[in-house]
Image 1 (spheres, rainbow, N blue to C red):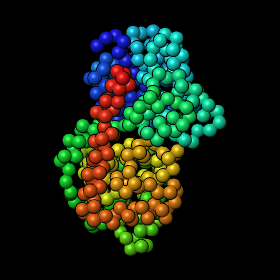
Image 2: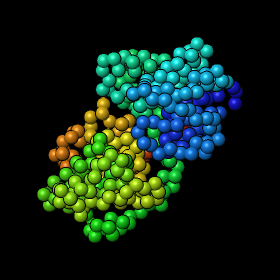
Image 3: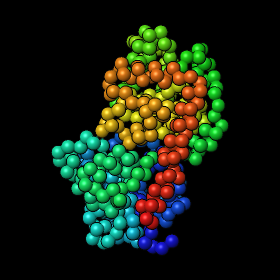
Amino acid sequence: MSNNHYICFITNIGAHYRLPIFSHIEKNFDCSYYLGDKIKSPLKTFEYKELDGYRGTLHNIFWGPFYWQKGSIRLINKNYQYYILDGEPFCLSSWCILLLAKLKGKKTICWSHGWYGRETGIKKVIKKTFFSLFSKLMLYNEYSINLMEGLGFDRKKMFCIANSLDSDKELFVRKNLHSTDIYAFHFKNTNPTIIYCGRIQKRKKLEMLVDCVKVLNLDNIKTNLVIVGKDIDGVNLQDYAKKQGVENQLWMYGPCYDDRKIGELFYNATVCVSPGNIGLTAIHALSFGCPAITHGNFPHQMPEFEAIRPGLTGDFFEQNQLDDLVRKVKKWIQQTPSEREITRKKAFEEIDNKWNIHHQIDVLKQVIYG
């Protein structure tokens, strides 16, 4: 591979879920990784030395919402032609790299959520200026691309990179999934099961799921609720369920990182619901054939909401409206077995078509070689 294809990858932190895609990138490109040591909120990271292309850890220094990656600026003088950066205007060192890259004739690629649709005032001006400095933009969904095109960005310079988990591993797990009695054994019933899998945070508004179970009870529809994840915010959902009188319908499963077990939980659940934003929970659910429901206020969503196709792979409800959430949940828990199987196939198709590592590699090849 010629020197002008050397890639320098600079990111704020090595999030655990990104190890598979990073590993595949270095198999397909001559790539060096420089990864930040911390961010403000707790996040599970991978062991950086697992990457053959790991070249160093950058020390992130914070001032309020802003931060600087110590040691990143000098990388612009190394023998790299492409620099892939996080699309974070709050990273002050990224601004310096972008300006220096222009002076040196080097290419910069943004890997970012991009535009949410809630930007106003000075934040809108800053973000627009920041993204305009990149040679090309890799954004997580088409929604963001469409918004940015409306702001005057060249669509030819924007690419939908989507997002993924460990899609090869999940595909292997998926092929071995089958119906089990995991919920019947725990709950001692065969009622439909609602699942949430992810970090337990206040912004996820999981109390709405407990309220949903209670309202369905009043309509003589009995459901189970399983919560998979770690409470990092002091939500204390178990206490809330007791207050609502539905503690026997709630299973606080706890954190789980075993895809075989997570696959079983999703495959045998009826529907996955994230009342707040949904993020990678949508990809996890669909990877194992479980439809997903979240709110439909897209400017306040995470980009993975785009994997949800209303009526096919899940649904959207009116944000913060319990009655509408109950209506949408009721629709999915009343599916027939044959309808549920069709939903599984649609979910698998969505992941296989877009939300996987191999699609991301194909997009990156378009960006680098196109």
